Length: 391
Image 1 (cartoon, rainbow, N blue to C red):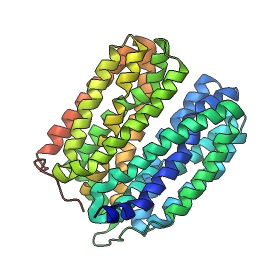
Image 2 (tube, helix red, strand yellow; image 1 turned 180 degrees about the vertical axis):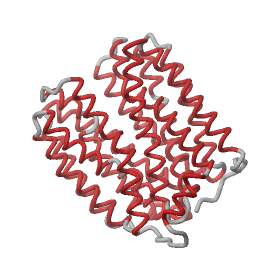
Image 3 (cartoon, rainbow, N blue to C red; image 1 turned 90 degrees about the horizontal axis):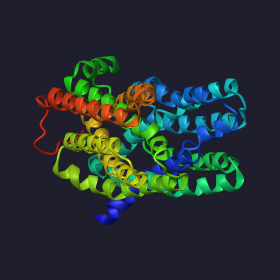
Image 4 (cartoon, rainbow, N blue to C red; image 1 turned 120 degrees about the vertical axis):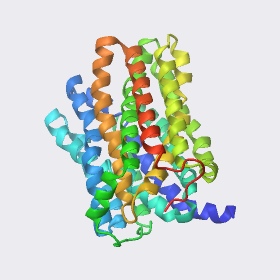
């Protein structure tokens, strides 16, 4: 049984490993590269907001095309490959005017990859969908190892190794994605009729509303936590080690999700994740010592594996047959799109006007609102008492 599971997980594990290895070569360092090119902070803010903003549009569009025409196997490697020329454009662009279209087209191609790859992997695993976390953890492993190595290379040789690493690793990810089988094409119900069912489904409304509120609070932490820790006296070396430690901590929790999903419904994993993030935000708002800040920040290694695994499984469960890619895209659009844009803008204003502790307290409050929406609106039409069989 263990040998069969290992063989089944090999291909999706490699897809996640090389895609996230490519991504970590550049995404954590783009703002630094932009600053070194002489781009102003205001312009960097615009460039940084583009990928999250495009998730709101690009993810549902690409996923809708994949579901409508049954082109998942072609679209996933296509958009992976299309990120490469735009990253090369970013590498040579020296002005805001040159970088803006490059980052827009990069975001338009890159933002749906997570949703489409999750959908393809879940379809590939079939009845063993509960093993999703065992494959996804290899993304965390590559993020920690390759991210640390890339940071050292950039310090030694400048940004060139980051761009070269992205191109080479993404090409391997494209080749591996071509080997994923096409998810089942279902035409029992017309696409637009299924889309209408999703829009009217109260479970979806509860799920997406909760995801959006949680996305705002999560973005407060992603965008502003390290600035806050630096203001408390943390150095960049400590922060770099913290980022790697978070990814390493994700590994045992991703591994645990398969066992958890056999015993409980994915909704319960999501609900528990809300609680973890609220506690993290409350503790962060009360920090005065950067060392404790790093320790509190490690809670993300618990939150993200449980939340993400529970959410992708729940999105698949709620999606009508043949609409699974779109379901994953709607989830990503609510969390990263609506939540990411709102969190970046609102967080910046709250931080500037009232300080970081106030902003994190607001984040805890928004997470609580999202949890209540998810719990109250969704629970009475769901069976949360035991694990749910996914489609």
